Image (cartoon, rainbow, N blue to C red):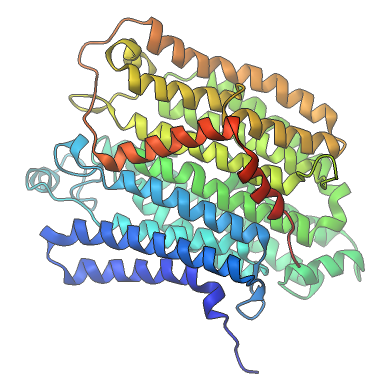
Amino acid sequence: MTAVIEWRALAPVLLVLVAAIGGILVEAAVPAVHRFFAQVSLTVASIVAAGALLVANWSAGLGGSVAMGSMMLDGPTYFIWGALLAFGLVAILVFAERQLNGGVSAFAASAASVPGSRAEAEASAARLEHTEVFPLALFALGGMMVFPASSDLITMFVALEVFSLPLYLICGMARRRRLLSQEAALKYFLLGAFSSAFFLFGIALLYGYAGSFDLSAIAAAVQNPTMGPGILFAGLGLLAVGLLFKVGMVPFHNWTPDVYMGAPTPVTGFMAICTKLAAVGATLRVFYVAFGGERWTWQPLLAVLVVATMVVGAVWGLTQTDIKRTLAYSSIAHAGFIMTAVVGASTGSATSALDSASSALFYLVVYGLASVGAFAVITMVRTSTGEANAIASWSGLGRTSPLVAGIFTLFMLSFTGIPLTGGFIGKWAVFAAAWRGGFSWLVVVAVLLSLVAAVFYLRIIVVMFFGEPVDGVVVGKASAFTWLPIGVSALGVAVLGVFPGPVLALATAAGTFLR
């Protein structure tokens, strides 16, 4: 059998991965003094070129099963790939910020050195920095693109590992508070390894049930079973552990607050949307394509997890005093809101065209805009020792830096779901999809917990505008590498709150998964 590879259709993801390999060669061949410029240029150029190829492929109508049936290039794949490239670009730009840190990046001078050691001190004094973070981010981005496009479970598992391993590394490479950063990376690695093991065990059981790794073959086996349902349910449950871990749902959420808090803030911003976007996309494909015939089995169980996720995110978020940790619990709550639509498993109609998949994809876009912008702003609020992450440190920011405080307020209002922000349209979309799917009770619970979550968003706003300024806390002078993502995110949140039509139309057009 001759292998047939659709090179043009796969060009966007291949370009990202080839650029990542090129970044490794840059580390080996380019003098240290020129590496930063070379890596940033290569990263930005490759993502922009991949986006251009994606648009060209979409215009040419390329699609269907590709890479010998291991990937599916359908509407959701195009939408997710486009969103990943856009969010990946603006998030990775923050990696390149040097002005805030006195001419060096936010990443460790010598990640292999013991924190507090003489080697670390010498590396910091020499103003060294790790430019390897750029190819590592590209490897992660490439894996994220393959993950939701996979139409067989082995390809999905390989993609999961490709994007997870670089994230484990760069989470532990913060320049300041290195012990906390390394602790975050270790927790993420250990818990991620456990979740991958569950995922792989689930693949083995499902192969035993269906005799194939292909999602469409599993769907056919579900419709025409040849054995009892026990092995099917066990395989589905174990597979869900690996998927929901990446989504950040309860009870697989414990890594989220520690990793968000300990990782370098630019990495946190990258993970906050790109990981969730890839994970939700893969979850949609697995549950809707392979297990759509068993929806009456998994819907009630998933609904229980969604409620638990929203409760933990909203209630635990009220108790936090660190702004990055607060946004981590916000991320958990938003995972529950997104999965509300997934539970509904509704289809569009003539009067209400958004189905569950389309509404989840749109929500991810508006959530991603607010997340990337919020974490970029966090990098700017600083003391003499680094970022000022304590919420109390943000007191009076509205007086000392009204522009920055105003932009951050816009992001908080979008997270809350206030009208005239993109977050309001996103919540309306996912709640409407769940309601049409027959889960009106779940929508009521989600609305009530949205009100609870609003408290900690509004608390931050009150602290910024009604508190007294804190001595020693300033807004650093950032370069365009930080201001550009902030500006794009703020503009996107504002525009989608008033004119959501074009993105809603794209999400609606992309909402059908092919088998």
